[in-house]
Image (cartoon, rainbow, N blue to C red; front, top):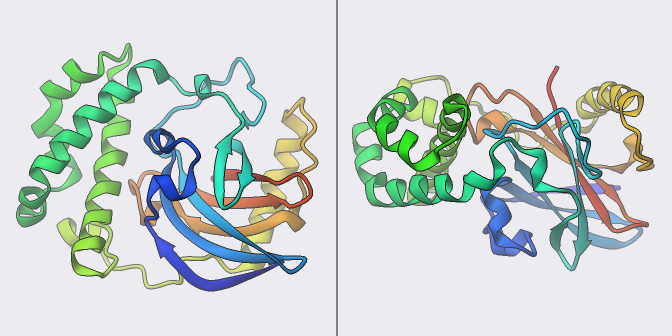
Length: 248
């Protein structure tokens, strides 16, 4: 399997998901192309950063931070169950509130270089009213990730330069590494993840390290606290892509 260096940052949800509403749960990070047996596949990397997964019950194709998608003409169809996420039924209302707020105030947030901490303090009251989560901390975690992602994406689309919110608002050093992980480094992490996954899962997926089709650091796009690495694993025989989040 070979991969190209040409990537698309922040692809539109309609271009990668059969159901674009999945972007509430899986934030699009980048798209690139891989070749398998002379066939091109559009591989999309995304992150569920900001959402907490339940430990029980176990849902096939959505367990241990491994999510399965049917690949169909360049777009993904989710094979798992969104019930794996805490407060999933209340998430659409929260996402709508956050999106409307950001769309209305994004230029103000950018001009003032509003930090994540300042943002959460400013919307705290409205956040509680909009989310109605049983655990308010879950709403805060989601909002933190949402704002980090949307701010960074807006900066990129406005100026054509990728700078994480922490670089713009807090003067952190810019990460200049390639967006796609080095395959050799990724394989080491993938082997460690797969060993643990095979011990825990009761389902047979047939996942191998040879399915590696790209990876990136999610923290370059979302909240810094979301320090996981995102892998895409392509099962070309079954037309299934697995999105895996690995945390060392």
